[in-house]
Image 1 (cartoon, rainbow, N blue to C red):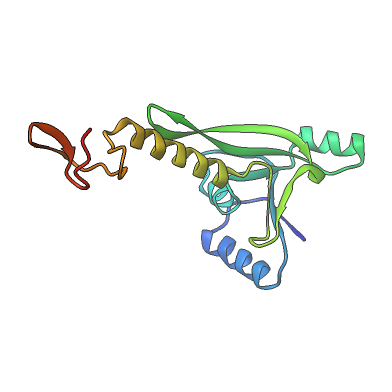
Image 2: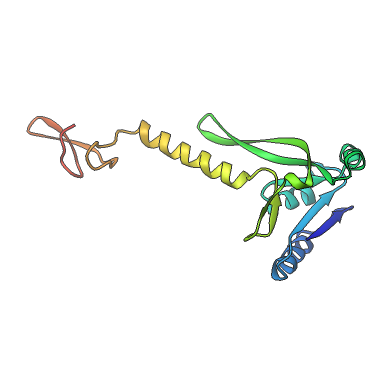
Length: 162
């Protein structure tokens, strides 16, 4: 495991190269910031590559680390939610110990919130609600147009009356 302490801004190409190096060497990398600026591109690039999680070793985290003897971070993440039938994001944060992080062995990433999973579940929920709101045939479940045959409304795909 490697901690990359990011004290100044850097190019995305440097971040990507380091990420690839650590991945080739089967090593977790945790990018640590001293502060977090949601408008600074480097910080956002680090968040993007780390499941939208950012680890910050600010004064609160340093004090908690000294107090407990365990490494703490202020973790920021973009929490997805459904609003007006689309996915919106809101930055949130929590002070938490390093031991509470989740480690994904395949991607070699550590995170607090699995934003990708939450986002996927919300996308599925949106898709289902959109399908339920459409006029689906109860027999073949298609969204095919209705046609009228013999005075009866039928699915144009399977001809079921509905």
